[in-house]
Length: 309
Image: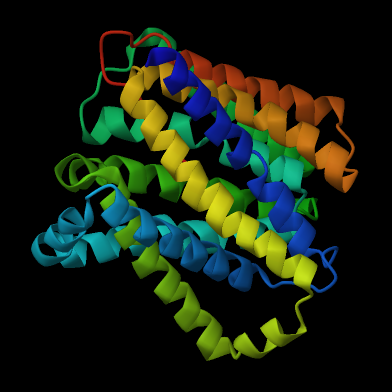
């Protein structure tokens, strides 16, 4: 059980490591047509919600989804607005304005933010090493945003993009912390489906206001295949593997595997997008990875941080 749990979580993290790379590929027009950031976010979660909706009856959890909607409907909708609409609007807009590798490194900060929020809001013990990990992770994220050029931070062309991605990591962490009670009560699969459905409908409303649906007629079959991958594989299958793995192993151990994501994302962005792996960005990714590791490993007796992409 424990070995399979590590395999499931590791598989999910490999899939999560491709999100920014595939999103940048689509949003830059490399897929045969330029797919807008709002369209990528919307279609990703509409497809992902449909995938999880199919899984709910297979796992016998459809009643939990109905109970959550009946008992905590507006709170679930608020979580969807925070954890899907706002988070992934910021993430995909940020990806437009910075490199995929930098976006992945910055967003990988979410376990560190989650630990910080959990310590404040839920009074979870962090420990000295954990607090040091928060500081190391924050330093790594700031270094990724500024490329270690702290004196000319506001003049960088990609500074706004990095800042938006950092904001999306913070809002996702808030979603994780405040959504914990609902996941424990109704199950993570049911809560994931409902928040995805609410958030993606809000994103779809934004596209409708902007008149962005007409653009989809110009998408190539290759672009649609990658959109399907983002929705069904990185969201649908990725969430399933992640939560199934976290059910089998201690949460702190599972969450600590997230230190692999920034390094994997750098590798994928270099291999598939040709983005250079600079020594500064690699150093920033290692700082973020060390921060995640320090935040999660010291708490062997407590409850670890659960962080998803």
